[in-house]
Each structure stands twice: as structure tokens, then as C-alpha cells.
Image (cartoon, rainbow, N blue to C red; front, top):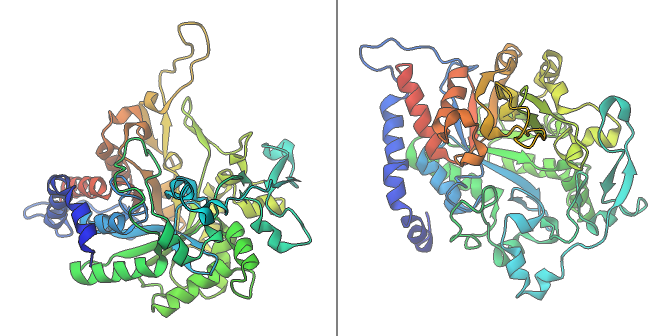
Length: 469
């Protein structure tokens, strides 16, 4: 149950919920799953022939601080099928949910540090060290070296000094692995992250970091109350980094304490089965492969990232000149192993077949599912300089082969991330997020990660009505 203070905070959005969330639930019940009287239903194009899932990405962060109790509660009330979270191990080896391990962008830690010397003193200020890549730069591109937090190769615990996450420099920030779960709860509160200037901020810092156990408890309680099966959709976040941190902190006895902790938690909750209300996701294939070998039996999802899009022709760009080359261009384990392949290698029929050996589905970036491009191209600015094509210029969005190829390989497709703000929408959609969602639903997408579950559930209800469901 929500505490009275939480209920009071949520009530400030009651007017919004009356016209969106509550209405959406009514529509969802009206149109799903039975066929409307006197109509002929069109089959779903999803892999299993069921309606596409609405996955509450970090809860409902479009309206509430992400990965906090009110965010997840609101996602359930909006009709989301699944609650998505990112997992890290704390200093005392507890699984907690935060999007990033650096705390300045998703908690109020900077403000807290101004009043709390213990917090202020935990900023990591030791620079990382440079490591040369081992793959062929001429073939794969990108920078010739990347940063590492292993500042002393002879001392595995030296990773607790600098703050480099998968090649990305966060020197001067605070690491989630330097705080116990109790300290995180006592000192810090979650905040908005994406589109933070446009999203409600008055609840920022007022709700603590959640443990994974608390999210499981919430999903179970709300499933029982609503009569719906609400799944948890958990990500092993930055697993190479998290495991090195956890080993240095004395968590577990093996090489994968993050994954081991997750399997134990699922076993303890009797949720480690193929039919359990659980999805486990990661951008890191080595994490998912280890989980399978170590006894994970739930549904598994390989996430697939990219860096940017050439809106002139719709091609996704993976290699880049900066640290994002190592963060979003390829799995980090490939970089440190000297494997120069990029995420696009996963999107080929051969790559999808390889994924099928350890996963049940893929979680691609939206432009990998739908080509985004502008036509006719605007070549020059009025001053004669080259025109930079933007997402707002995109007037053609068409399906790639990915859904068909993934389904052919026996993999479902859950695309990320759907957001309402115009800055995230192609110009084609005229600032209407439902128009974007409908295009993906009509193409046969199996599920959508969304920051606005209320919008996605409403769009799905419209789609169900379209096909007489």
C-alpha cells in the first residue's frame, strides 16, 4: 500500500489521470481481448499472436521521478503490462534500481552533498587510464584507445578509485557502488532524467531508491489486486563494470556477482521459470550467456543499441569518434576482448540466429525497426553551408526487415524508447506520440518500452479497435 504522503502527492495528478489513465483502463477493458460483436478480427502480427506489450520503462517517468515507488505505481494504474528497471549492486551487495551508476543525473545527490559531508567525500576524483584497442581500426573505425578504471593492473580493488564506466568518463561524480542500500535510502531520492526540463520536477528527491525485492513485491501485490499479470523486466546494467566493482567490494565468490545475485533473488521469490512473470535483459551478451549457463530459466532479451542516425538515408550509425563508440556502438565485452564488431552484426539473419541460442527476444532501438529519413533532401542552408538533417525533418518512416527476420528466427521484438516530447518524435508524426506507436503496432511489434504507459495503452486500445479486437 502507498503511504499517505505518497497518496497526497499522487492526488495532484488526479485530474490528469481521470482523462488519461482511468480512461485508458476503460478502453483497454472494452477492446481487449475479445472480438467486438458483429466484426471480423484481424490476426495480430506479433510472434505469439497476442496483443503487443506495454512496458513501463522505469515506471512512468514522463510524470514521476524514474524508478521510484510512485513511478511504478502510476505505470500499473495506467495499464502497463511490465515494470522495467536497471539493476546495480550496492556496496553491501544488494540489488537496487537506478538507470545509471553515476548518481548525479538520476538522484538529488549534488544537493545532498552540499549539506552532508559524508556524501560529499565520496566523489571519485582519480583519473582513469588509457588502453589501446586490440581490433583493426581500419576495419571497424572509432578511437584508437579507451579509458579504463583499472588504474593499477596489479590491484583489482583499484577499480573503486576512478569512475570510468564502459569507457565513459564520470570522474567527479558519485558511484552507486560506494553506498550501502541503507545509505541510498536514507540520503538520496530519485529524480527525472530524460527531458528533465519538460517533465514535472516537484517530486524530485522525495522518494528513495528501491531494491529489486521491493519492485518484485509491488508487482506481485498489484497483480493480485488487479487480476492482471504484471511482469518485472529487469536489466543487468553495465555488467562488466558492476561485476568488477562488486568483486572489489567483496560481493560473492565468483566472477559474476551481479548475475549470481539476480538468479538467487529470483529463486528466493520462486520466479525462475519460463512461465514466471519475468524478463531479463542486457546489452551485454556475455551477461545473458552466463545467466543461462548459471541456471536462469526466465525469458531473456538481448538489447541492441546504436549511436545516431543519418536521416538523409535512414542508416543507423554505430562507430563514432568519442567514448560513445564503446558505450553504444558495441557490447563492452567485445571491446576489451578485441572484437571490433558493432551492434549491427546482431541484426543480420546470422546474428539473430546466434542470439536465439541464448535469448527469447531482442530489444532494438526504434530506428533499427523503422527507417527514419527525409525526402526530398535539403542539401544547403540559405548561406550555402551544408544542411544538417534533423529528426524533426523526417517525413518518411518505414519498416525495416528486422521484425520479419526476428520472427523468422523465433525471437520477439520489444523496441525502445517511446516518449511523448516532440524532441523525440519524427516530424512525420506532428508531435503526436500515439501516431508513432500505432505505426509500430501495425507493423507487428511485440512490445514497446515507453516513458508514458498511459499514452501507449491508449494507442494500443485504438489499434485493437482498428483490427476489431
